[in-house]
Length: 135
Image (cartoon, rainbow, N blue to C red; front, side):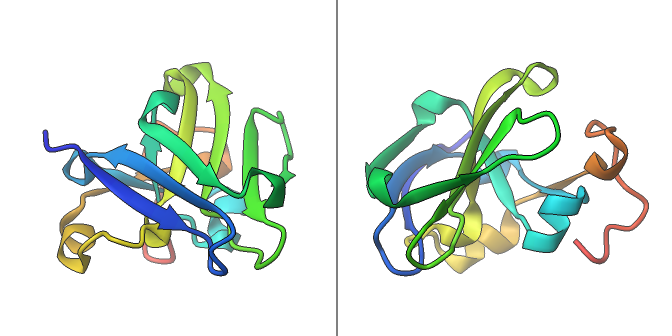
């Protein structure tokens, strides 16, 4: 396990953060309606692994369904660099960082990061969906 501190931001730079991530432990893509439309590719963290550095006032929020996730986005540029929430089935409180919003991650590390696929469309996050190619 190699945890590194990465820095990330939205497109306009109003929202900045740092996160302690072990990319070799895996990243995730989900096929639920929200994640699929956003082309979501995240790293799931515990809240203590994430630090918002700037832009709290610029953050908007979107919730749907059970409202267990807080999908955060920059109200200036529209980019959603992270989300937060609480889902008991995945270990309680979490932060999901969009790995493509990491500004200082070497491309080779992203290419080497394992991707775990979740069937959120059918509320079966513990199993892979049949149609992974579009994720």
